[in-house]
Image (cartoon, rainbow, N blue to C red; front, side, top):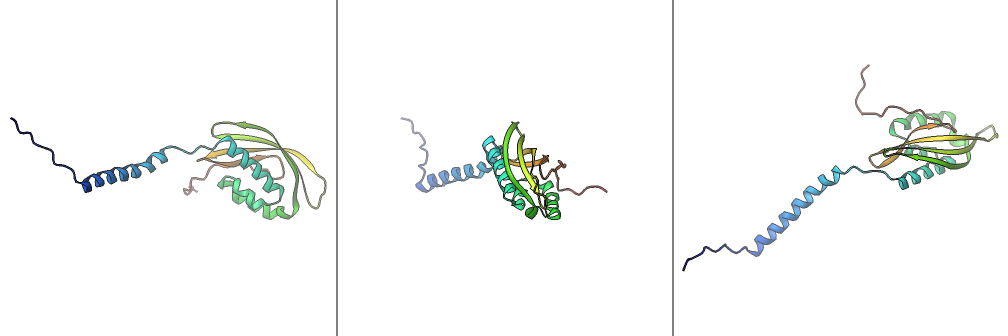
Length: 164
């Protein structure tokens, strides 16, 4: 008869520690996995952002409208709004979303906007093109062509000082 060495039995405390250690490791690695997956904005989010942008502009809430602009455009936009007193004088009477061209990371939305700027009461109806860009899962306006507040695209800010 041969004697076999028996494995020592694990205590209940040892088994609980091993289970807890495995759970902690899994939770610790999870943020790395989540971070690796870049967020991607979808067409439904773009439609909602476009509708909200137009509604805020229509109701002269231009400071809130600016939240939908790319960060590098906001300051110039708000300065122009204040200089022209747009929250008091710009009246958007109607808008209609006409067409959308949606790519993987960018989109162009064409709308028809009717507006006037006091003291004039003559309504202008113009095509307005909004260039949108998906930035880490959030749609932002990077340029506006036509309409009551055209904005040219600017290079993205890197946050680094520029050489002079």
